[in-house]
Image 1 (cartoon, rainbow, N blue to C red):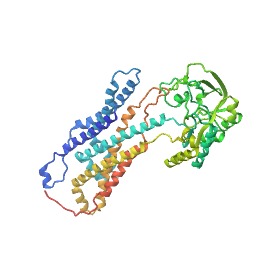
Image 2: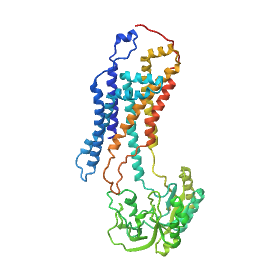
Image 3: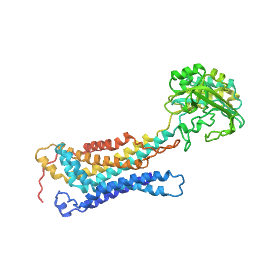
Image 4: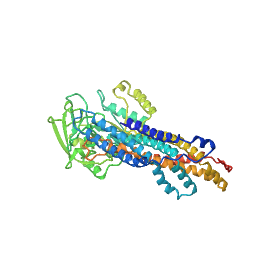
Length: 537
């Protein structure tokens, strides 16, 4: 659908430019050879001016209606047709019709802007007058700028929405900059874990690596696994993130649900010092839960089952637990849901009968781990562990948050839009100044400085690019807005594509691009003072 929007947007811009270019080609050749500089008379057909606003309105309404239709068709429980794709074509065609309507009404639009420009001085008044009286030259420029900015806006809005959706679906394991590693496997004992801790601290002295206790969540099918119970489990339409995360109810050897340590260990996992309530709970020997799904009425329940009774998709086991235990707990709220369940002191875990083993490495890596550090850590471990080196590999998983490929896309798209717009505007301004040669001669005759002619070109570039960019940005946001316009609550566990346009990129396209092009025209506009010449045809 995105490719269809882009393709039809480009075709609409080309079609609008070709219509105006065809009109521009109908010039009086004899008058041109005589040196007459009066512009070709503009068409007075009223139907185009009247059809423009109507066509633009129809395009906007079609886009929004088809977008809502796509969402309603996609929300059906059974979909055995392609109606959503058929209706989705309207989301692509609608903005293109709106562009064509803007082109048809471009002269009236420029005339409205000209009323403002007349109050900004002589150069601005001449510039807007030329833009209005020469629609066969200015309308193609307006159409090309609008088309380029429209396509750029569509690409950037969909890219920003995709990035926002990725961020919403991302599951943080710990606070950002925290690295973890599990020292588990056959043949690994307490002595090997202590040796691993010494090696890691030797190679990474600034990481403040600690060895925490963790519940055992791997083994044979009959091995017992103890997990906290999600007492607030929701009716999720789909397993996703947050309160519907698979991790809440499924064993995970790399991210265990029960950890033990002191207050400083918990602070390193969270990235900040725990609250006063959490510290008091640890001092009492009770639990601290980083997930509210586990706590009800100040109590958390833990069930023990064989490993084989847990499913891979996080559904709650239906079989009876072999044993259950409850313990007091408080909730430590975090900025985003983490893959951290319960945290206790070793003494508290022992008092409540929870079996853990010191097997979970935690360190602080604000800048991540470089390849050189990884290679050094592996080589040092091979030397220090000797024959036991193959029992464990020293590899840390560092939480860096979701990747953000949007910024490079925005930079490339904006640069391409700027290059195309600058080229089209420069050509148009050159033709404008050729048509306005008589005005330049009059200005020279009355003693006007060359800077006046320069300002005329600059104001005309500002007018065309500003109007085209603003209209292109407005129409470019329509497809995404239409495909994200929902009137019902989103089911738990479902993450729809949000309407999350990046304001910085849109501001650059709508305002920064006209400023850039205007500055470029001002820099390349002719500075040579002309000699007043009077021609007689």
